[in-house]
Image 1: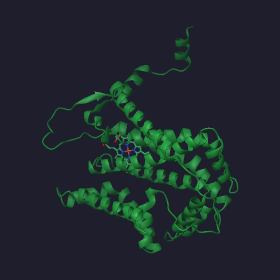
Image 2: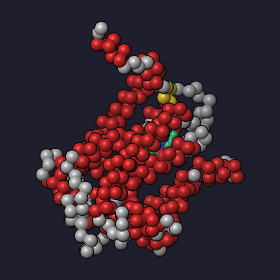
Image 3: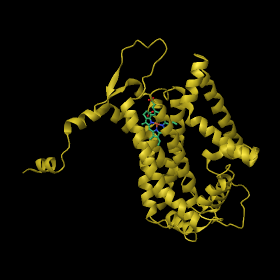
Image 4: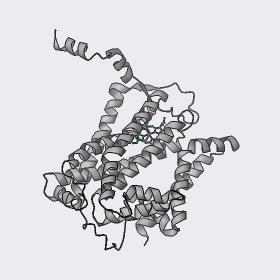
Length: 347
Ligand code: HEM
């Protein structure tokens, strides 16, 4: 028996259905990069898994060793600084691409029937990615990470009714210490990857079932449907995108390698506590409100985001053709950017 026949027999895959699976016609507008932005967070997630596994080889999740192990990775381990830098830059690109992907989906209103649930899965994915950022930043156990944990758990404690429980659950006790690090580590390397993979799986499955929305320009609705095959056309387009992103990622990591701040010191509050840029709008909001409003604001925002397809449906029924969703989107974006720049340039 030849090798091919043996593989066929011991691992019987229906080749016909595999070919069918990859032969899905892709709408022509997906050649526009902003319609294919969902691919970027996907690649970045793969990069995160690969570089993250490499980092686990050297990282020690113990409160009196974590900082030293990161220092070891950054200054002693061969190419450790590069892997760490790629991991950090890739997380930033993933979040930036996710934001652009969400903005594209929002303004092309492709969360509408039948894609409401997939939008909701998207919001969950966005939250999971933010949690990756928060827990990952904390693992470094430098001053900023320690105080970010302190502020983060303090904010969680202000959640109405269940705040105390959430904060205790995050810290693993009344104070930040070994139990907190163990929990953040568990979330960062086991639970969040697991749930993210699951949610990405469902997200992509639903996209595969619904297909990516057709792009309709005003006056062009009648134009006959133009598509191109997934293999090899779309795969090659994606490969070009991957190459460009990889070049960008490595260039950023080489030019701006990630550094290491001072070791965490629970007794010394830093002059300026700063989270990562994607938390800036919320951070500024917290600074200008009191703690309760500060916590309720983002929660209400997230609830609106989560149920947006249904809120939009309500507006569309009440005020047909008035483009309320568009204007709410514009005002929302301007407000968030206002808070972002206020935090960047303000005191
Ligand atoms: C790790 C996170 C995510 C990955 C890997 C991902 C991946 C993708 C991909 C590959 C597509 C196909 C079209 C495109 O590339 O634009 C897509 C479409 C879509 N995504 Fe995501 N996405 C993610 C997060 C999100 C988020 C945060 C939202 C919204 C809150 C969202 C909502 C949607 C919707 C509604 C569609 C269908 C759009 C259409 O048919 O035009 N996704 N996603």
